[in-house]
Image (tube, rainbow, N blue to C red; front, side, top):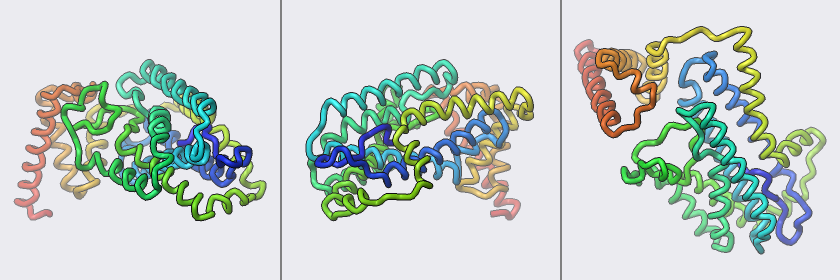
Length: 332
């Protein structure tokens, strides 16, 4: 997400590209819709795991990618020919300060999933690192972007599992957080934005975009897009506060940890296997965790290597047992 980054070109610093503000405004509205759904899930009004899998997961990634792409575009438009250090450091301080504030607040409110490196943290760091790519050829920047995006698929290191290194994004296991946007692969979206802004500038597309004047329908989106940091900081407290107030009048049905586990497990499993397999597999997992009194450890987010290895072994055991059962029953 581009947070209050200037969109004017270097030779014409006073002229903004309204189309960028509109796209940013649309992305902010989409983000608010996702967060509202997450709030409903958090208070128990939807099935657990709804926003973590399937279409909602793709939706969230598209939103984050759009924000970070626009960070790269705006960074190049503002500083492509000459870095304006005063303006850069002022905006960097605003975004970094807001990121720290989010970490502090979520650490108090939701300690099990607090935001230690979310979208604002990534924007601050990516804006700083992106300065090194402003003068490089667009094609080279795009190649580096592709490598950064692909890195987590091929490069995972247990040595980076330490909490102080989670911001890199190449640890063997992704940590638990309500908003985790590490350097890899998300810096790739920023680099792609820088590269596209370079292509647009050299091809004349930027000038054509700058001359576009949408109608009055776009005014709300332009306003939101130009005050993106304020919108980001304000919208979620308002949304979650509204859902909380509603829950005081009409609370969601109470769901037991066992039912919560089965629903989340089923939704996750069905990303790769059929519903029949997943129902049997998740039942096996739940029965075993309960028999050994390990369900609480799972819900308490036990991150020890011993428990992670145990869960992996348990998953393998239940997978084999379910496969055998389905083979014997003639179900594929």
